[in-house]
Length: 83
Image (cartoon, rainbow, N blue to C red; front, top):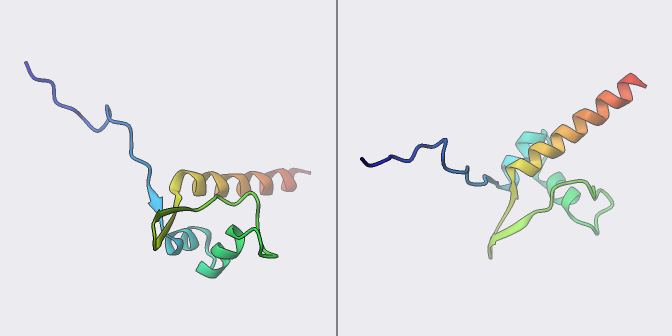
């Protein structure tokens, strides 16, 4: 008998977000995403997810890292609210 593979058995492939998608998730402009990512910018956020090159002209962010960043922002808000 042949066993079929199901989606539950396969590990999910990482989802790569482009700058506009990251900006939409955070409700900021694409320029702000680049500022937060750039260590030379005065708006640099060291906690911001690190982008990576997908190809010579494409940069992406891992969706899981962007979601974790949003979670950390929410957790910090909750800690500040309870103090």
